[in-house]
Image (cartoon, rainbow, N blue to C red; front, side):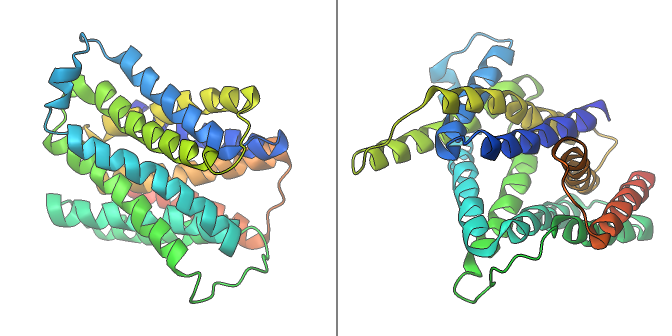
Length: 289
C-alpha cells in the first residue's frame, strides 16, 4: 500500500507543479521535454545494475517502451489541444474517465474479481471523477468536429495505463523497473526534442532557463509516479482494477484539495458532492480487496 500512496502523492504533485506553470509563465512544451529527460535520468540513477545499452536494447520490453514513450508525449499534446478547443474540464474528465479501460482489461485478461461492493465503488468513482472535474461553466462547445480530441485523450490515457500493467506483468523483471521506466521517458523526451527541432527550423523559438528548471522540477515526481505505480501493480494482494480506481480517484481528490488550500480555487456544490463520492468510492474499492 505504501507504493500506491507514494504514487498518488507524486502524481498529485505533478498537477500542483502544472498549476505553477501558468503562474510563472512557463513554456509548457520546453518544460515537458526537460521533464522527460529528468525522469529518464532519475530511472538511470535508480537502476542498481551496470547499464549496458546493447543488453537493454535486446530486452523484450525495449521496442514496446519505445512505442509507449511516443504515446506518452502524444497524449500530452492531445490533452493540450483538448483544453484549448473544449476546455479544461473536458480534458480532465476524458483523462480520468479513461480508468475504465485498464479496469476492463484487468477483469477480462487477468480474471480479476467483480464483486458487488467493488462494482458499486467503481461506478461511484466514475461519477466522482466527472463531478469533481467539472469546476467551471466553460463556454466551449463540444462540437462533432472537436469531439475527436477528448475521445483520443480518453483512448490514449487508457492505453498508457493498460500497457504499463501488461508490460510489467509479461516482460519486466523486478530489478528492471527503474530502467524500464527510464526508457519510456527517454523515448518520450527524444520525440519531444525532434518535434521542437522541427518547429525551430520553421520559426524563431527561444529556449529559456526557467522552462528547463521547471521541467527538472516536474521530472522527478513524474518518474516516481510511474515507478511507484508499477511497484504497486506488482503487489500480489491487490488487483490492478483496484489499484487504478484508487490511484486515479485519489489523485483527483488530493490535487483538488491542494487547489483549495494553496491556490484558493472555488468549488461548486457538485464538486463537493464529487469529493464525498470519491472518498466513498475509495473506501468501497479498498474494502473489496
